[in-house]
Amino acid sequence: MDLGDDLCLLSGTEQCRVIQEKKISSRELVQAVLNRINELNPILNAYCEVSKTALNEADAADKAIFHGKAVGPLHGVPVMIKDLILTKDLRTTFGSSLFSDYIPDEDDVVVERLRHAGAIIIGKTNASEFGYSGVTDNHLFGQTSNPWNINRTAGGSSGGSGAAIAAGMGSFALGSDGGGSVRQPASFNGVYGIKPTFGLVPVYPSCRDPRIPGGSSWESLECIGPMTRTVEDSALLLSVIAGEDVRDRHSLPGKNYDFNQNLQVGIYGLKIAWSPNWGYASVDPEVRQILEKAVRVFSTELGCHVEEANPGFNNPATAFSSIIANESDLSTLRKLNKEQPGLFSQALVSILETEWTAEDFSNSIMERQTVYNKMRIFMDNYDLIITPTMPCTAFELGQHTPSDIAGKTNLEELNDVLAFTFPINMTGQPAASIPVGFTKEGLPVGLQIIGRRFDDATVLQASAAFEKVRPWKNKWPSIAEK
Image (cartoon, rainbow, N blue to C red; front, side, top):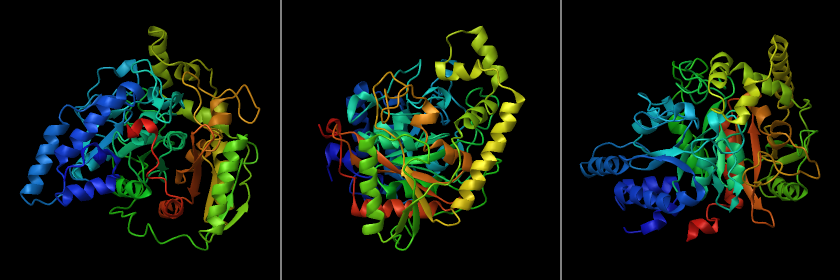
């Protein structure tokens, strides 16, 4: 079966199937993806490292199938890994000059599981330095562009993964999300991304090893999650990487997940809250119009009861900033910043140069408890809550915020751009971004679906139900169709 570059347009699940059915070889697929990377990466800068052993691993995968050996669910299929996630023998820089030549001697737990499932790690995707910014730009590799408009940002900090998926430079990707870093680039790039319940997917060594200053940050916030073109692909990927592991002290008990098993059961009868602004956030009028049209689908076509409501917490951006700082290795990073001026990005430097107090950190913990309790009580009455993923579409390269949102200027990244995503890192709930439409400029808009803690399955089911009636799989940016 010779599909040429069309292999890159298959979903990840389809790629798995045609390899296991021997309709194509792993080598054919890996070579097609490498060709696409060679063609588009000079334009998008989505990958910062490409594996030199991928074709050899593909040959080994083909040999295993030829000899009838048992294979895993991702056998012979390429998967890209965000550059904040450790990969053994493949450079991991965390987007920082501090680790420009760092080659880990162990995999992150999730990468270990991917390899066990038969996946081929095709390369590393670009990220902001240590994840401290909502745009993908760093001193080592520069900016990642959006495939729908290369003069716009791909978002961050998993912008490389989002752009690569949108452009067909691979069908499976891992991102990480400490304040929206899976969901924001999913929204900006018109793909699917899910942040699982905190602790469902173990994280180690990244975010958990003090020997990696900067890379050990975000411990109580960070989640690793799939970014794909389809919900089915993310459900498959999440099934592979989820499950307890003693190396992560936050890891939740549980194993042998299969999120695809009941993916298509539908969501008829669910009670859903629609919060268009949390009660305080600004949203671009065109974005809100597109979102409200999508929200009506849940009631008119999917059989849900939808009502507008807010959980009632105040904007917790100040508290969230303090939590980030409290979970950063301030002592080591401040010492490095003083010894090597210009080493770090401005986003990180601003945290290091702030004179935090014990009360800042204590107050942030109290505020987090308030947000969680209000959300928990609110969701006693709802199965899901849906919000904008982003209050805007992808903005210009070189900026950290758009020029304005709904007429509001002097915007801040947390208060304004990431307003809908970071509170869900504070509560630890599962949340996904689904593509729901495009602006007149042709830029994607995402809707955020939030579930109760531990109820990742319902978030995936709601995502799949919407995808079934408003499919997005075959909507590609023109750069991917050339």
